[in-house]
Length: 127
Image 1 (cartoon, rainbow, N blue to C red):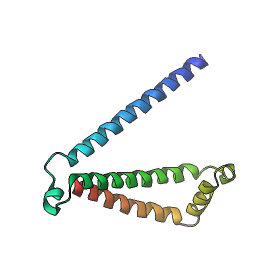
Image 2: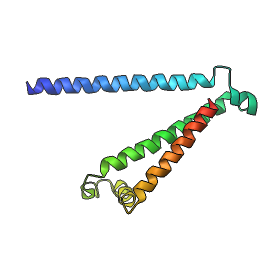
Image 3: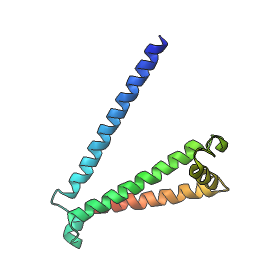
Image 4: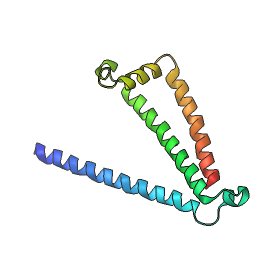
């Protein structure tokens, strides 16, 4: 029965991954379709081609994803003993050590929120 539970959990994990990828692909397709629907406010007003808008939006999406990913990593590594990954992941060790000094983490969170708000409003303006 233990193997049944692990097989079920393994299959559920695959289903979650596939559904997450499909949802992500749908969101990306919708976001890209907005750039080429022919009703571009920014394109008409500022004479910016749709391809440039697509490039700028892609860069902004990557920045938003990076900011969120960094936050998840820093929060996820906080309860772990840093010595566990000191030798195997030295760059991670240095980054986490720096981020957990004093009030650096709270300042990062505040700055991240302001950047996310700015990026989201910019993406909204460009689409």
